[in-house]
Image (cartoon, rainbow, N blue to C red; front, side):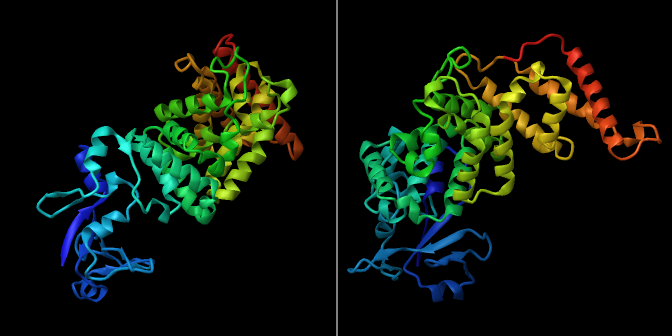
Amino acid sequence: MERYRVGGSVRDQLLGLEPSDHDWVVVGSTPEEMRSLGFQPVGKDFPVFLHPDTKEEYALARGRSPDGALQFRPDVTLEEDLARRDLRINAMAMTADGKLIDPFHGQQDLKNRLLRHLPHFEDDPLRLLRLARLAAQLDFQVAPTTCKLAADMAANDQLDKIAPERQWQELKKALLTPSPRRFVEVLRQCRILRAFLPEIDELFGIPQPKRYHPEIDTGEHVLLTLDKVVALSNAPEVRFAVLLHDLGKAATAREFWPSHRGHEALGVPLVDRVCQRLRVPLRYQRLARKTARYHLLAHMAFDLKPGTVEKLLSDLDAWRNPDDFERFLVAAQADAQGRKGLQNKPYPQAEYLRQARQAAARISAADLPASLSGKKIGDAIHRLRCQKIAEIRKSFGCISSR
């Protein structure tokens, strides 16, 4: 029985990164022997065990029988197991004393910052999304042959074989990489984006008014907003909302382009479609819907009457859910600053709306005459909130929203 550290931890160590965890392959053993040594079985599709002390994962080496069936015989070699992995940079192993085993020249690909597939890449369609995620995580290029293979797999509906929940988890992980933009770019480069997120793919090539969007192309604007949100927030909910905020621009009437009047409301059912298809958790869907529907009103905040601002805050559920409201403000800021040459333009609307909510939220029935009742209480609270919002607006002076 021999054990080897494999996969991402070896790759990350060679890149000078701190490995998040250690995975091991065991050669020359059986499930019975692993259990006798105290290892806890956890694998469903193939034998994976947790070490009794470190709780790190140990998998038996995988191979194929002559008829193609997956096997875990004690005579399966380390090289046979490594050959079944997705990319050359993930097919390296290291002995317990630090000796590198690299039968497929993964170290050379690390040096060239290149993602290149192995013959069994097609075994798992989820690798299409992992390919793009790894490119975003490491800032690597994808080899042309690998990109072509990925495009062929996507064209053959391979993503349909992946459970929606697994697709969502890959998207969530990709949004948390240093460059979600790169994830989208690689998906598009390898013609995976149309199969995975057609709602995003359709945005490329759609024009916007140059006055407000010097980058013009809506798809490029989405990439710029992703760049901006990385600097503003680590929250995956915010990054997801930013990704989907402008879906409605693909649904506006072409004859009015580059104007997209009403795109906010048109985007909400498209957000719902993405969330339902990928079975996105409700809290992500809720923020994405709010961002799609109300981001333009946030930009226009200084032009809105106090009563309209009060209604906006109510529609955003800002009174009961201030944390989600704060996330909405960050998403709106990423949209406003995710424009070519305007990345550092101040966005005072966020602070105005934040202060307006804080001031208006202090108003309660206790501030009203005891003689009021029923609907009169609600009307009185609304008036007092509007007064507070007007005071806050005045304190900001005359600021153009656009």
